[in-house]
Length: 397
Figure 1 (cartoon, rainbow, N blue to C red):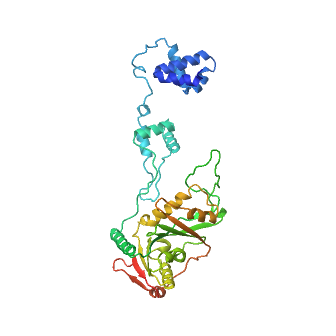
Figure 2 (figure 1 turned 45 degrees about the vertical axis):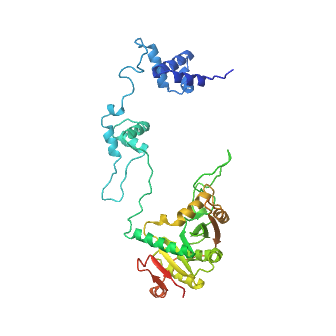
Figure 3 (figure 1 turned 120 degrees about the vertical axis):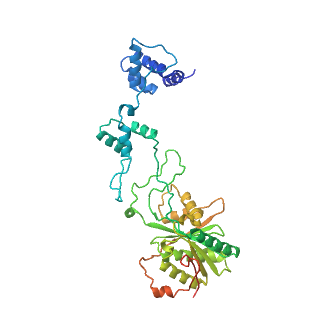
């Protein structure tokens, strides 16, 4: 025998009847049950008490009209709220415009549903949040988040600099010489903190983390500086525990060369580095150039550097060929220790054959180190004729 519940009955009838017939049906059922019938049927059929009461009124009315093509009487149905409140739309549009002095840096608007409701109420309008949403949709509004699309003003030599980087890179690749992309990934707090992303878990099992991400309750911070070998599609991440300085950046490159680079390029006397224009490896960072000079002298390498033009850091190869996959690999996993960070980075792979090595750097890197004009002048820097501030070679001394 088929188990046909009361809920199933209402579901079937709702699909067969038009709006008026359905209203009369649930009203008849509520009337049959007597006291408490309206509430019972409302719960079971998933309708409002108002609908049932309206059906009861129609059942008791003497001028009950015959069913026909129309579902409602002519002129029936809820009137548009703007038809009853002529100034509502204009007042709502006014609230959506930014307020305050146009010359001020700070302007505000009451865009949340609760704020809009209260503001309209203060102007004498009676309207609920649901009605406000429907009205906004009818006016062409929708919920939208901020979209990252503005990079800043493009430099006049932006394209020319990318061509310079491509020419230099192709020359190094053709000669079998190392070409690396470098940058520092976002710093991460170590501890039982929320990590963005989700991962599959058994039903009933949840990973719980701290409510607050305060530095004071963390076990330290991880500073991952990455080196991406463009030729071999391999990554190296030096995970520091102190500050992101130029000394730390060059030490990360040094560790890559000692652990991996010199074995991959045993005959090379040159190294090509592509870096962002700011930060620890920035164009104007004097300590970056001084530390590269020391590294060049130690290894005998001629180090050619090309900086990405302003507002183009997202085009750095390390961002979308290494860092993005690291973020995917550790998504939804709390970084509870440095060992966890090292392991998750080291196990990052892709179908294209990416391999990653990660090491921990426990050195301290003090900030505020100054490089004098005399020290800068003593460096063996050969600058290119095109944007020598962006493109230069540091030779061993």
